[in-house]
Image 1 (cartoon, helix red, strand yellow):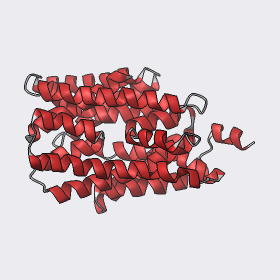
Image 2 (image 1 turned 135 degrees about the vertical axis):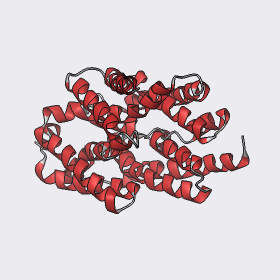
Image 3 (image 1 turned 180 degrees about the vertical axis):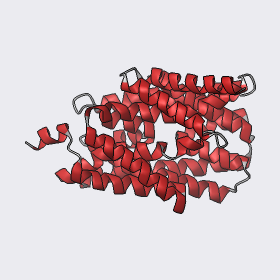
Image 4 (image 1 turned 90 degrees about the vertical axis):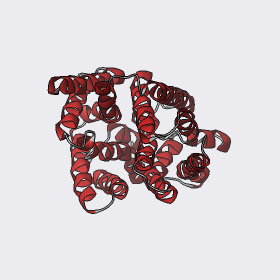
Length: 217
Length: 103
């Protein structure tokens, strides 16, 4: 599993070097921020000459989805103390959220989440380090190909659920269409949040989850 | 470390951690009904789908088919129940092959 995260970290490290960040700055950002998509977007914007306020505002908008994701995670570790939750909150990323909330209820324990964020955090920082030092060494074809890693990971996380549930598959396709259409008319980060919420709301009506049904009985 | 980058990193740390931490503080006060619970369980799938589409088509701005091929490779590998790491590395490999052929 670790190997899934390292390529994304390497891709970020390379992007940061190309944008003109120093090695230490590239790694410090990964240590403190720990948000793959936001960091890639931020270094991309920095490379294009965007200012401080614009980058911070874009990061905030892109991260509003973590409000929803963290709510899902916290709902699953409800009995834990506030200290543990505040620590766990730092580790809520697209990847840890996706892995944790698609895991069965019995396996998705607070300790499982703690292990998950330890692995994802370590591999994120390691990947960023490797990307920062290897940026000039890697063949250009390899560095160009690493951009797909983030998307391949999300697809790999979605497919197992979709494979077992036709309605869920339909919902995923519906969301893809809605978000693609919305992105044409409103900024990318707003389209992302709006289509996520809108389609999940529509999904409540027609998708049946086996786990859910047994819980209600 | 340059001062402007340090400020950027600290600012990003704040706007990244705060949305993650708010639910940690509020969760004890919230009790979800069955429908809300279902809504929260569907969000992972709608969020991931929205993160992938349409962005995957712009992974190489000038060649949209790069995203299509990498995405298809990931779908096929994951559908065959291969581990996540194989799916990711396989997708990277497929894209590399396309770049090599295109050279």
